[in-house]
Image (cartoon, rainbow, N blue to C red; front, side, top):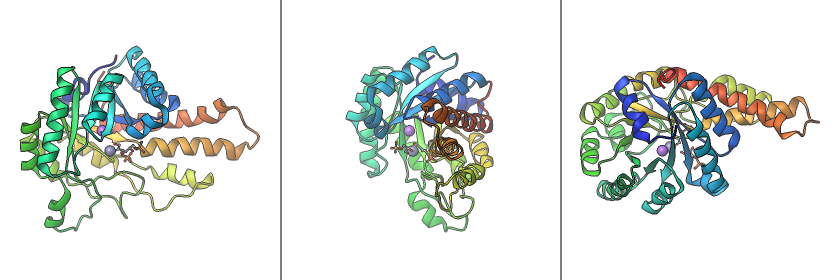
Amino acid sequence: MLVTGSEILVPAREGKYGVGSFNTNDLEITQSIIHTAEKLRSPVMVQVSEGALKYAGKDLVNVVIDLATRASVPVALHLDHGSSYESALKAIRLGFTSVMIDASHHPFEENTRETRRVVEAAHAMGITVESELGRLGGIEEHIVVDEKDAFLTDPEEAQRFVEATGTDYLAIAIGTSHGAYKGKGRPYIDHARIQKVSELVSVPLVAHGSSGVPQDIVERLRAAGGEIGDAQGIADEDLKEATQHGIAKVNVDTDLRLAMTVGIREVLQKNPKEFDPRKILGPARDLMSRIVEHKMTVLGSVGKA
Ligand code: G3H
Ligand code: 13P
Ligand code: NA
Ligand code: ZN
C-alpha cells in the first residue's frame, strides 16, 4: 500500500530500526526495491530525484505509484532533494506521499523559512516532509572538534529548527557523504552527535549518503571492465548502530547504481552476442535485489511490515 513517509518512519524510530529509502530511475530498479520489500515483509521508501524526474518524468512516477499501491507492504514515494517550494508542490500534485525540501545550503533563518512554507502546504494535503540541517561531508576520526562543528549538524540548532518548521523528519550531517568515494579509509560516523540530536529531537532522523559500496561489487565492476578509483562506503556496523539512536530513514542510491552496472557489464562481457534487453537487464535487476535485501537485513526492517 502507498502510505506517507511518517507512517513508515515514526514506527521505525520507535522500534529502533531503519528503513531503506532507495533511489529509482526506471522499471527494473523500482521492481527490485518493491518486490524485495514484499518478499522480506519490510516497509520501504522509493525516492525519485529532480534529475530522475527530468529523465523519466511522470511515466516513472506512475510506475512507482502502481507498484506501491498494489504492494503487500507499506511503500512511500518520496521526492529526494527537492530544491524549492515549487518543486515540492509539483511532486505532491504528481502523487508523491513524502517530499524533501533541501534548503540546507542556505543560512539557518532562510532554511527555516523555506522549510516551514513547504511543511504548511504539504500538511494541508496530508503529505509529510523531510528537511535537512548541516552540510554533508566525510570526516576523519582525528579531525578537531571545531572543524566538525563547522559543518556537522548542531544538536541545539536541530531542536530549534524542528520546533520552528514542524518538519516530520530531519536529515542530519554526521559524517556520511554522497557517492562512491566517501573517504580514504572507513568513514568516521559521529555517533555521539546522533545521540545528542535524538535526545533533543523526537522526529525520525535521516541519513543521506548511506551506501555501503560493497568491495566485492567494486571488484566485480573492475573485473568486468569498469573503471573505479578508491571507492569507500559506510560500514554496516555504523548503520546498524545509527538506527539504535534515532536514524530511521537511510538513503541509498550509489549501491544500486554500482550493482546495475556490474550486472549489465558481466552479461555483455561474457556474451558479446547478446542483444535481448531482458537477458541484459534481468541479471542486473537480480543483483540490485540482493543489495536491497542486504540493506534491509542490516537495518533491521525485515518482518516489520
Ligand atoms: O543524492 C542524490 C541522489 O543520489 C540522486 O542523484 O540527482 O543524480 O538523481 P541524482
Ligand atoms: P549514496 O550516494 O550513498 O547512495 O546516497 C544517496 C542519497 O543520499 C540520496 O539522497
Ligand atoms: Na531525500
Ligand atoms: Zn541525499
